Length: 331
Length: 146
Image (cartoon, rainbow over all chains, first blue to last red; front, side, top):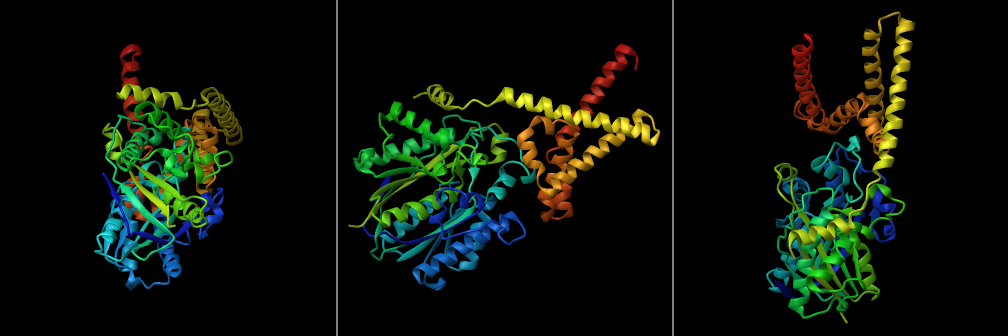
């Protein structure tokens, strides 16, 4: 299902990243970074909330608006019961919709909000997300100090907060269309190879988006997946070719790979993940390049693995989803 | 495309893990810990004039203390990541697993945090350690009479 928009514009976005992202190649595109994984707080969870809250603060300064002028806040994160999002929603005080599609939560949020803006139900909204490497490790894997060795296919949850302000007032970049993802499951079970679990979901969404809009992959200057990682990216390219006969070799990249320097930052293994991974790359790097008109048409396909430790231990296979939005420079 | 065909694509792109290197590392590092342990055993038996059975308890306590201390200082997770099984199979790994769980959950309180999570990783070792000790003890008793 692809929805087209006429009057949905991105006015500004904000990004805050942690130490590992700061050491990566996109550092100069972030609004703020910190060396401190605790972010001056006492726990990883509180640190994540502060990242998120600070990103809202920076965004409000950029768009020169008060909290009261924000008509809707949509957010999602990885922690149980999306507690980071609800805490930030309380601090912001705007009407709030909490969403969850794992690492595609922020794009799900943008799609919901964009529909309401297009339908003139609201004039603007903020969509935000956050994740924290160690808070995610603690929840999904092992205690952080345990440092369990991981296979090369494992990905690394990015740390930071990111928010975007979307409005019906005309601006440089618009959201042109969106494709809502279907849940896909090709019976993958390895939580240390989520790229393999999510690639078919990304493929399905990309295929349906291109079919609905009658476009070729070459229509876009850049097609970005959220967090498939080094091996997931290769799987997607092969799978697209074999199943849909579509060639992604020219203009396709993955946010998880772009966020870090995979040669020197060995601890990230296959690359970044987490909802803030695609947000840091898109809201920081991609929007900047679009403002300079280096990219004019970008398809962002955020991928999410919809599992919990409980579902994994009960031998359930990993379901995945991918939501896509198409961004365009307004001529 | 069937799931099997997809599995073939996944397999094609799966990187190989450096198993031989990991085995060698585990052998060398585990061996070094063994040597340190034996050195301590000799040291305790001669300097404290105790039996080697009593001294071996002291050796275990020493290794647990040092490993826990290293975990608390925050660098032992990097060692584990490097030395892998060499560090986490000996008693140092057991101590590290408990201390790291303890550190992680201390902010959720003494009972709901540390109390209910300290054995999060090591509970398995204790449970199946006791069960298998009982079974092998039983086998030994039945075959050799104790």
